[in-house]
Length: 94
Image (cartoon, rainbow, N blue to C red; front, side):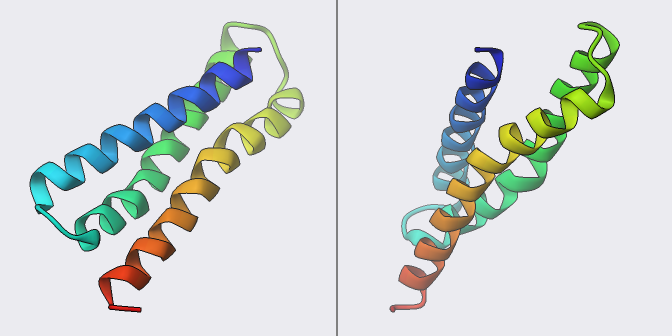
């Protein structure tokens, strides 16, 4: 259940990144593409913090947390990268 909540937080963060991209970059798909791409390293940091909390405070081992890290990071990151490619293609007129 916790992993689903963290993945949901990843999607919320992606939405925030897209909103900030629109606010700063203005109209068009290019600023949104940049925001989607920029989300990935920010989310990696957030997913690593979640893993650290799981290891240091919840008592899980690193080997128990690694698969959780992979899923928690990969799901929102994959959506962001697909979105980035779609927006980039649209920005180039394709």
